[in-house]
Picture (cartoon, rainbow, N blue to C red):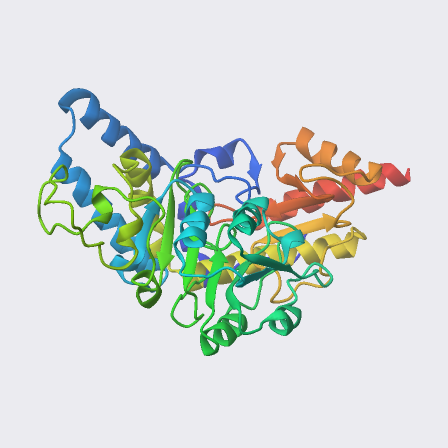
Length: 405
């Protein structure tokens, strides 16, 4: 099988990138939506941090400098300011920080599409029923978040609208800019779960009218588990009070980290008020290295490259007669291609015997992907190339031919 998935010279940088990810020698790895693989540069940064801690105990001033350096780099990646970035444990942590920190009142409501959200962007809102927050739920339209239906549910008591920028299944892109503009016009906090988009597609929180954006570092940011980042637009952050408060959320100027100046206190500016205790320095060291790579290549170039691979895979599946969610490739597909029937299975399963057999065939041939809600989910990042597309389609073709005969 020789499909036309040739890259132009614009994508040449990705050929060198692939060599820095040793897992690509062992696997056809298309599962960044589940978790990333680590580069040699990230591993070297982790080792350097551990060596410094093991042999020298670590220099706290340098460790804090690392925190601020990475905060600034991530802010640059999403077109934010450093003071608008807080460190979290993961996306769930960030979403809960927003849910509990907003100045909403009993009787206010939040609008979301739970069938297309990870449960961790549903439970924080259900948990607040006990304090009087109403949850308004809308149903998906053919696997897409229904923006028109969300807008119809907005009223004078709507304080939050929350969506995923790209759903984890079936992996369709949400028109964030349109929904964000509507929320901004009506003074509603627009909260985005960026699990499947940050590091993969260009994200500009200013142009997309995003007020809050939660992300973790083990997927598109090519880092480790155990750390996340939360963007909160300054105008909103300084109206919010964190549910939990620690020393780094209190503004004492340049005072020592263990200092305390009486019992009156002033919160840190912007989203820094949400920082709690000491940081995950190891995960930050890893992110320092991976952000350098992402910023060097550039978000726009990464987005175009991954869309090229994904569209080629989707079109190839269609030509083979494999059902592709969303049909012909278009702007709704970013780096994720899902095949099968949405809902024909649980969170990590597929009930269709034929699709299960195809999944087993691909796994037996070292293809890494996920099973989500009845779908086979393939997701690309910068270490993938056209050969990965060809290999998946070739194995699928061989499976189908064997099935016929």
